[in-house]
Amino acid sequence: MNEKTSNPAATFLSERQARIAANKTDKQLQKVTAAFMKEIVRTNYIFNFSWLGRPVIQIPQDLFGMQEIIWAIKPDFIIETGIAHGGSLVFQASMLELIGKGKVIGIDIDIRKHNRAEIEKHPLYNRIVMIEGSSVSEDVVNQVKSITKGATSIMVTLDSNHTHEHVLKELELYTPFVSVGSYCVVFDTAIEDLSREIPIIDRPWGPGNNPKTAVWEFLKTNDRFVIDKDMETKLLITAAPDGYLKCIK
Image (cartoon, rainbow, N blue to C red; front, side):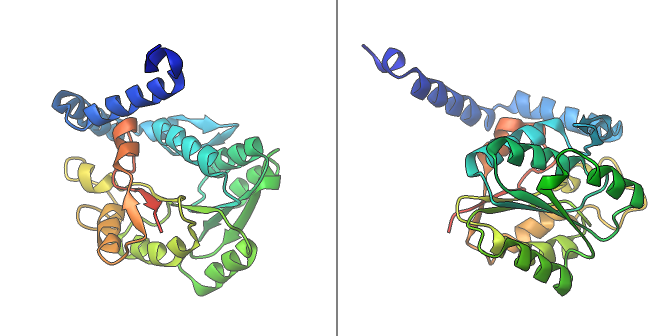
């Protein structure tokens, strides 16, 4: 009896890894992916979706990647900067509800009254804590420390102000919360790759000044994290190229 028949689960995973590895050198696939990414930015594709009733401003493939990470890690807390309509908060709360533990801490400098009301009446609000204030303020960071005290498994997602300076400061402040084996996911790193072709209007970020440049700068002096290239190669369509940072020590 060969390995394929004796251990089909191992064979399935092995074949998956081989496909992901092949994606890295598939020039045609990369070309098509880049073209699609350009078009979905042009057409505001990310605004087309909801999660359990709340608008979720994310590429669906990234949500799929996030659920894999959350299910594997089973965190006590997920810290998320940037709330908007609350769709990502509800998505993460739904995953925590499925695993039967944990809360998501959402941080935003301005939680709009109507969004707060909708989030607070959502059936999954028991898994959500919201903090209004700047994600890089000492007071907010201290609140997060107090809430997460004693937790052994924490992950972080960064999706607020997308300037290099702000994201770099968030990385410095929030990566210490991340437990070994967990992730800090930095969204909208794709700004560096796409904004040269599709100008960003009325935003302080752009080419050379965005989450990806912050990640690159951060990793020059921090050896606790590595870029999980397999995740973005698997997803192909992602707002977070170089943004899936895995904590290795």
